[in-house]
Amino acid sequence: MNIEHFVSELAGNGLTFFTGVPDSYLNGLNNFLKANIPPERNIITANEGNAIALASGYYFATGNIPVVYMQNSGLGNCVNPLLSLADRHVYSVPMLLIIGWRGEPGTKDGEREQHVMQGLVSGRMLDLMDIPWRVLSEETASGDIAYLTSLARKNSSPTAFLVPSGVLTEKKKNPREGAYAMSREDAISIILDNIPQGTVCCATTGRATRELYAQRDIRGESHTFDFLNIGSMGHASSVAMGIALSRPDRHVVCLDGDAAAIMHMGAMTSVSKQHLPNFLHVVLNNGAHESVGGQPSAGHRISFTEIAEGCGYYTTGHPVETAQELAAAVRQCLDSGRASFIDIRIHSGIRSDLPSIDMSSHEMINLFKQELSK
Image (cartoon, rainbow, N blue to C red; front, top):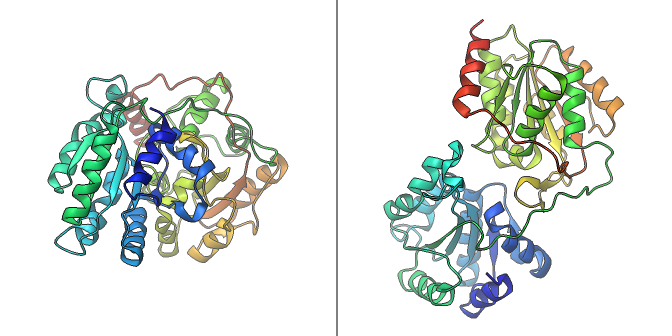
């Protein structure tokens, strides 16, 4: 689809304010908005529920209908604000949701474990929430935009597009960007070099899972110590914390991403209530939503270190930027006797020959559980 024309059609129907969380199925749209829409009218939020609330505030203040974009996995983050804030029985907020349809039945992506059920139930979830929707296609886009906008305005409630693969997509690029010396894969390798044998690693959604998996193969090491969080963005640190609590005899390292950590940052406060000397939480911080197209996060604009200290973590007092700093920080944190945290500043980019994970989620989790049962 001609994305400029699509955005122009939205504007022609009075929709000129955008907010949400980027998705690779929408990366053409997200990149166009980044390049052409002022940042105060295109706001990337921490999670999709935040976007629904922010869009509601925009509507209350202006009377104009906002657009909220997301991957369909983000619908779970939206259910509460959609039903208890925007719903016509509560504050009646018209908005247009643009939702990347991962796992669409009958497609190749529909066979991927983390997308199967999400793809099957996306339309049903919208139906249950009484949100009218259409599948976006180039042929019917103009009429469907007008219809859904008119319906949102008439009923003063949300409407939605489900967007299949390829409709608002452009080819993802993975160039190196940023001044920091380390890549994410460099940082993962250095961490593996400096943790004890048998340490459990929990990797966040996206590139970190593939890079941890690739590093194990490169090093001839087993995958049995690793939990690869292929879905559920933002929850890897909580999975890791649950393991650390249950197995105090094992070191547990969470390889988190900046956008993922931000998405459910409240999870970081849980360490204030627990004694977790075996838990190390690292954020691989490239300041971007790299897995879905490289749109900016707030990762390089905030102080994760100060936030972590306020939540009860031990830290080294500053972000680390070099291999030497990272190696020393890992050893220092492991010896701290407390739950610890490292903000690792890295550049974006991924090598072109990075292999895919060649194990199923069931194979991986069965091996992992067997290891934890020892």
